[in-house]
Structure formats: C-alpha cells, structure tokens
Image (cartoon, rainbow, N blue to C red; front, side):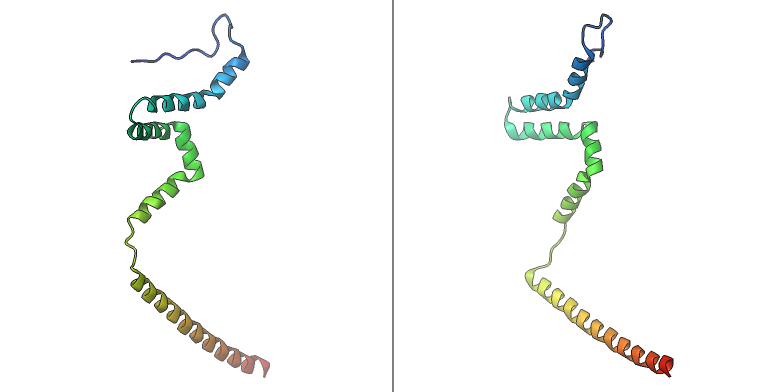
Length: 126
C-alpha cells in the first residue's frame, strides 16, 4: 500500500509558507501521537513495546541516540547484566589483596626513592 505525500506547495498556492513550516515542524509530535494512539486500543504491554520499537527505528531518533551516546549506555548496561560478580567473601579477599599489594609497593618505591635521593645528594653536592 503506497502512501502519497502532499506536496509542500500546490500549484495555486492555497497554503501559506508559515502553515507549511509548522506542519513540518510538528510532524515528529504527530507521529508520536499516532504511535501512542495505536498502542492504546489493544492490550498495553505488547503494544507499548511495538510502539517503542517503532519510535526507536525512526532515523531522527537513531541520529540523536548516536550523538548523545544512548546506544553506548544501553550496551554498557546489557554487558553489566552478563557479568559474573564475586561473592562478598571473594570481594573482601580480593580487596584486601589489592590493599596489601599497594602498601608493599608503596613502601618499596619509598625505599628506592630515599636511596636514590641520598646517592644523588652525595654525587652532586660534593
């Protein structure tokens, strides 16, 4: 079923340019309104899903989602659902291991820094 579109201006110029502008300006709102009207006359959840899917397939919506990073956030949350999270006991054990490693590594760096400081002071200040 092919849909014919109205030309922006007819041959006899019966529509003003302002009316044509506002008709195009409010077109996305009319399309959303049509989609919402379609979802209200049947059982809601399935039809709301279809309406949202239809709305998400609009090129303008996809473009805005691409610019704002909505796809990135959505895919990040879907990835987080697939993560196998450690138990509380494993989390505490791993956290304590990281803290102990950080303390030991920090002490090692402090000792090396102190030693190099003494060596360079002896070599440069003599």
